[in-house]
Length: 90
Length: 185
Image 1 (cartoon, rainbow over the protein chains, first blue to last red):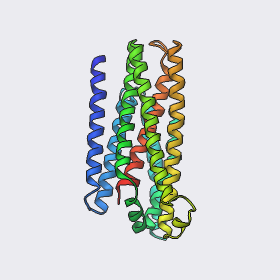
Image 2 (spheres, rainbow over the protein chains, first blue to last red):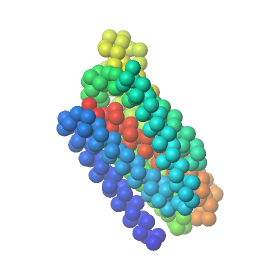
Image 3 (cartoon, helix red, strand yellow):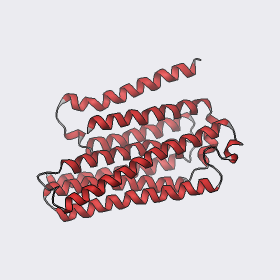
C-alpha cells in the first residue's frame, strides 16, 4: 500500500505534465470559444488531480470536510455567473 | 489550514472574476496583449511548479515512513524549484519592463484601454502569486530547519503536511493563471 502511494504520485505528476503539453499545443490552434472551454476544462482536471491525490482529498473521511471545496467553488461560480448576467445584459 | 486555503481561493477568485469581465469587454485587446507574453518561459514555469508539487508530496511521504534524509533532500529540491520559478519570473518581468511595458509607463498608456487593463491584471495577479511563492519558500525553509533539529519526524509531521497543502494551492492557482494569461489568445 505504502510503496504504491509513491508510484501514484509519480503517475499523477506524469498526468499533469501530459495535460500541460496538451494545453500548450492546443494554444496554437484557433478554435475560438471552444479553445477557451477546452483549456479551462483541462485546468480544472489538473487541479482536481492535485486536490485529490497530492492534497489527499481522496483519502479524507468526513462528508462535511469533503464537501467544503465543492461548496466554495460553487459560491465562486455563482459570483461569476451573476456578474456575467449583469455585464452581458447591461 | 483548509479554512485558510479556502479564503485564498476566494481572494484569487475575485481577481479571476475581474479578469474574465474585462476580457469579455475587450476581447481583441486581450488577444493582442497575450501574444506578447513569453509562452516558453510560462510553460517552463508550469513544469517547475508541477514538479515541485511532486517533490513536496514525496518529501511528506518519506518523512512519515521515517526516511529523514531522503525527505530533507526532496524538501530542499522543492525550495530550489521555488527559487527557480521566481528567477524565471524575474527574467520575464525585467524583459517586459525593458520593453517599456509596466503599469503607468508612457508606452503602455499610449496603447488601447484593454491592453492597459491586461498588463495591469498580469502584473497584479502574477505578482500576488509570486508573493505567495516567496512566502511558501520561506515557510519551506523553516520546515527544513525544524527537520534538521529533529522537531519534525515520522511521529510529528503535521507542520510539514500543512506547508505541503499551501504549496499545492499555489500550484493550483498557477495552473489557472498560466492558460488565462499565456495561452488563450
